[in-house]
Image (cartoon, rainbow, N blue to C red; front, side):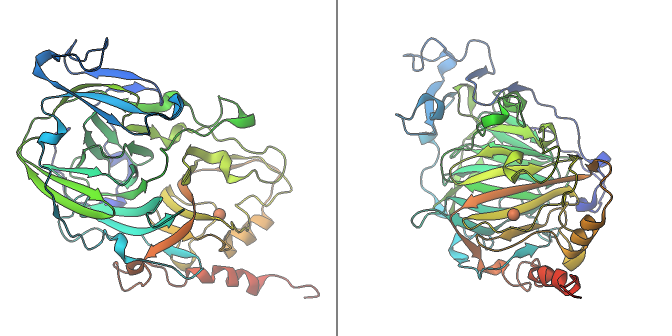
Length: 457
Ligand SMILES: [Fe+2]
């Protein structure tokens, strides 16, 4: 059973859909506040709050806990939830077969040469790809050992998952849609996630992605295998700046007993599947502080320097973990004077920068060399220099700065990850993956050099 009823629509170019045609209404109710404890139930009194495991749970349900952290973690870093469900998860099939998926292969990772990379957006799939079969692995970063701390993926799909459910055992899932809304059912309830929002689904939680109005979907997905994403400390900014915990939305309990389901698990970078006679979404209520959540990036309150020079891009941080920082570059004012206003030239010795564009234009890039397109993505591995392209550079050094500049019609994000980056080798040639890679992207710096005025010139 889908969270929303699908409504067929005329055939349109799905990735060029005007904003007004995107489904805007969110039919679901939410609870507010990241980090809070919640209790949510489909029928009043079905979730015991006096205790967790009464001898007999109301309505014949069973109590089952999911814990996301080591039991002895400090309370602030210890998330868990009790789910009250028709059957315990162990009653679902436990024998899974390998499910080969040509594009979702962490086994294809190789060490890239140290240079800038940029790719075009995924094109509309010709086959009936859903969210899972439409995933393509870009790369991963490794902090210690052989297991990735963070993996990077992009997706494009034209069909709903239907009676398929997905559980990622390797880490928590972060999704940022670029085109098409995602109607997501989870064990904790349903969320509608539109372009401009992000959603986080806890490690190991079942979820299923349906299209809305049959609109194709495209976007970005990351799997964070380190400590869970959480709000950054405010530091000298204080608790009221940038990101407000109350802006995070948490689903309310919603049960789905439709069957059968195809269950797909991601474990150690490999997909497995099994047929199930029961729904994994047989949860009538839950309580705890572990749950999926979504956040509207448009609610981010950017801060900036008000006189001259740049603050570090960390001022745009929405979520952090030990593996990565998640930052957003939203519309905002730039009042700086005597300042090169776009992002400056720089190198990060330790950090890898994956960037995506939700809509509009990113302030550091013009249209040259294929441009940084909505749905496109770039990676600047650690140590690789980068910055504005030539057109952006020369426009910026000539601009009139007597007034503040409005940076508008843009929404970009950056996943900055620490460690050794490895790339899916199929992403390195433009012949593979549908010609995604912009082979000449690395040359944009040389373009600047050829027109810079030399001393004495
Ligand atoms: Fe950078």
